[in-house]
Length: 368
Image (cartoon, rainbow, N blue to C red; front, side, top):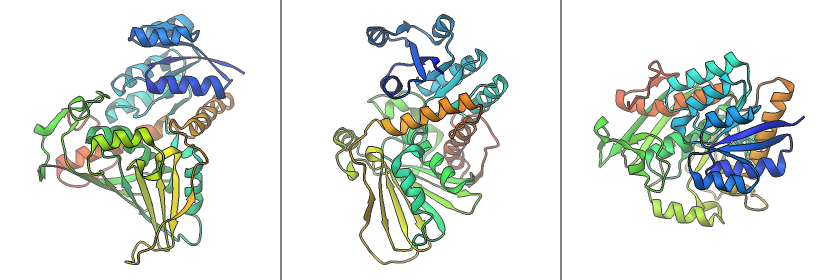
């Protein structure tokens, strides 16, 4: 069975997905691309695809069975609603939405339409994540107590809204539960950030991704309490944008990106590192000891996969199988909506000055 598809947004991620699907997922036939930028449309046309200026034009012209949404986050809600109303199955880039209220509307539209929707959380499909998951089940690890997560060290709005969803989705998978509370804080020049520190992300991250507003900040941290009793401590790596960009270009060693988390158990620890689809390390030292030991490499990718081709292929294949079998995908729109709650819970807690319950009571964007 072959499904016709169109890609809305033909930037870096859109092009990567088009290539992955063309080379590895024959069940999907991409017929068109929608992008307001003429040069991007021309790139698509040169590969034999129809170039459209808007999502509306694409859906109207080719009537796709699948819509792949890789636009900037402010457009996700409108485009998911449009695709669902048109009866299209949906693959959406993360973050799903820019507020819990938007996420609620998207979930309701997808469920009303009866279409399959998955969100681009490819981490759980990587070999390294499978190795990590197995490591947490071994006797040498013991009982899971907490995760210590360190983000990439880019400006807060980028990390909280674009990178942290990877962590939160992974933690829900690893614990089989959702967080019920979060306590977060943001510091600017040694003081608590205020609403006066809210700025467009384009000011914080001049290299691009002008998709939302965020808090200007130095350090940022949050603590989550999961329903199972597991806690998550989240930190922002010391900001050095020039280093992060240069290291990301090289990506030849595990230390070339900051993003990682450590699972702490009663008998040992396991670390997952993001670079090149993930490295896994372990050491037989419980979290409550001062003993110092080196990390032992448990898993390293055979060859670099900086665009995560293999896990992305598996994610798309799971999406197709879910459509064919009429089941839920492994990454559901409800999962993605829960992640939206959890990310914006940091802002809500910071402004309240106390822990806040999840899901958030106020469904609006905390900074709007």
